[in-house]
Length: 100
Image (tube, rainbow, N blue to C red; front, side, top):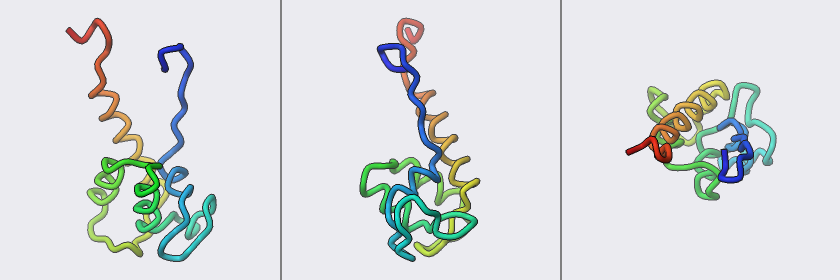
């Protein structure tokens, strides 16, 4: 929630990554690189454009056994990584007067 009491909805990590054009296959923003997901190169471009954070890239690469920029990150894996990062970030935030 924001300080005004409104809910803020965060997009799944796969959707955030698709906001950037892929540097591997040059797929346009909004469309996945393959039916399974998008190239890691696309997430790197999303990082450069401040659509995602270093923590997202770390979570993605930690979840892969081996990778190159051409590695396709399945959407389901990307979204799980995004949820994990969001949970970690929520745990790092102070909870107001209860945090003393």
